[in-house]
Image (cartoon, rainbow, N blue to C red; front, side, top):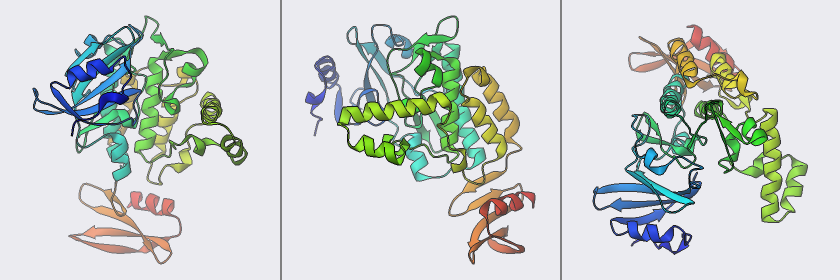
Length: 357
């Protein structure tokens, strides 16, 4: 059954209806969107596509036709993009059946080396945008799409803007609150370092760091009492003010939530990416990528299945619960055998011991 398009605003509905002559729209999704997202089967291309309608403000965001010219293996292909009127535009991309990075984070855990490989791909796409004179402004897991099991690309362009000669753009339109860098809230300016800030957040989440999406989870007990007593719109404004205050103080990341196999060197990279002052961050995506490339070979290759498993060239170790403590096992042939001398009460210690074996 074709999707009923009557829920769309009048400003974009005629264009959606026009597109429906060639695209059988079957679903919509508001997840992670700053606009309206429709899924459909393109009868001309003979495959599923995603069409996103978004505000572009007659130039406040990147020219739609320019979006369609982007060509990078780290950016999802844009099949078509055009403006509808002075305020609205749309772009069309292939449908990714494997979903986005948020879906991947819900379905699996990434080890440190795997997380480096994911963020390096996203950084490469960001670097391409910066090289073209643009800022993404809305890098987050739900805007990173999985085109194969281990290949991730940037796939949403509704917040892309051109930067000026000083490397920033004035930003009046809003995007995802949790990922807004301090300078955008304080100055209404978005710099290249703002994208680097968001890359740090994605790296943190890919490594297993906690970042609640429910605004209520950011409130303390007394704040929740006040929040619950407010009308819906007042609730949002109240929670937003508290979250913005945390952003301004650089208090958004809870490094203690990272799993015990996260190396201190990667935590240091995250802290630098997400520094409160943009001048304390990496000055370019290339600088961040260089650090990641240089450090990758020295990072313990933990892979997380039922238990954390440390992969080495010719051997593997894993940490398992054992009689109320944690034991270390070594893979011998196809069987796991316990290293009898090691039984510790704290998993962090077991992880560190395994890394020395």
